[in-house]
Amino acid sequence: MKTIAMVANTSWSMIKFRSGIIKRLLHEGYRLYIIAPYDHLSDQLIDMGCIYIDVTMNNKGTNIFSDLRYMRQLYRLYKEIQPDLIFHYTIKPNIYGTLAAKKAKIKSVAVITGLGYTFINDNITAKAAKFLYKISLKHATQVWFINTEDRNKFLLHQLVPKEKIEQLPSEGINTNHFRPIKIEKKNGDFHFILIARLLWDKGVGEYVKAAKELRKKYPHIICQLLGFVDAQNPQAISQEQIDFWEEKKYVKYLGTTEDVRPFIAQSDCVVLPSYREGMSMILLESASMAKPIIATNVPGCRDLVNHHISGYLCNPRDYHDLMQKMEKMILTTEEDREKMGMQGREIIISEYNEQTVIEKYLRTIKSLVSTESHFRLKYHDD
Image (cartoon, rainbow, N blue to C red; front, side, top):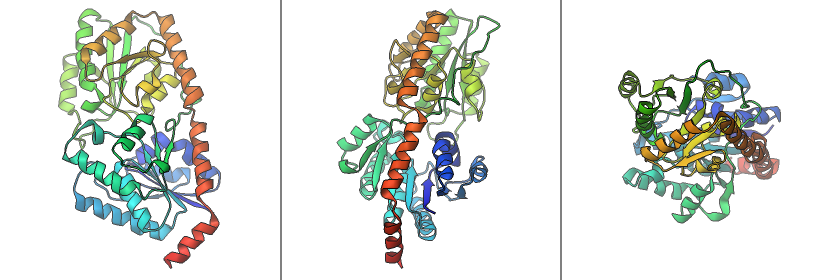
């Protein structure tokens, strides 16, 4: 039985973004290890049939000693379980996991799901991350990118050897699970919704400013927020700030959920004014459910919105332009919004279907994993 390991910064992200490939690998008979810090969805991975291993990592910190301890943890695990191939996701697993896999003489794939602060900011931490990417990624067997602009940035900064690069259209979306749901409205309210971790760099501040101004002119609109308050993230918006916005009736905070579909279904338009994304899962899900979208004209967002066809693109960090696009959506007829939504769904079905991504994983595993090479590596280590 071949063994695959997947290493991430949360169990939640494995369930949220990769349930499809996890189920398929288990169905195909692979022994599948998931290595990630314990959270509320870790037990669900076990229930699916994965071998889950809890690890300690400082998700947001920049303490090099903590990160080196994390790398040593991974190295010892890799030596113990001897996977045939390892997939790493997000920055710390990509960097330290790739180095640990190299030391353990095991093939690995680094999946670059998004750049985040590494390229949004230009501070010491970002420069250090770029340096560490450059050191580590040359040891990966392959490096996968979710969008072409991230790939081009890495090439521009010479962070990855060109010959190692592979492209994924996205993490993939199950278009049967995320399908249009018709909800009959009982009043004339118009619902916008922003679904994301509540971070400033998701454009939440711009959304609230736009909502504040629009509600003066269109009191029937309801602007909602749905998502985690991520207190550990330096970009996190405090619960006190959200409470203040609610008190002023600028927005309505809906809390968190494990199933976004009912919230997408009841909305008239999904908004994501993010400063940058790898490939926004919430936009994939919303478009798959045939909802018109307003998003920023940045990597990971503009890929999923055909401007004036399936929604509108606005300028990043520009609440006034966002407000204009939201007003335009309010004034669009329900029939035209439905057409927008169906155009978006057609794009998702043709270009971002989960099955395309799953087949990419399976082809890669079959090409990189062989019984002969696995035994040779184990024999060499002995």
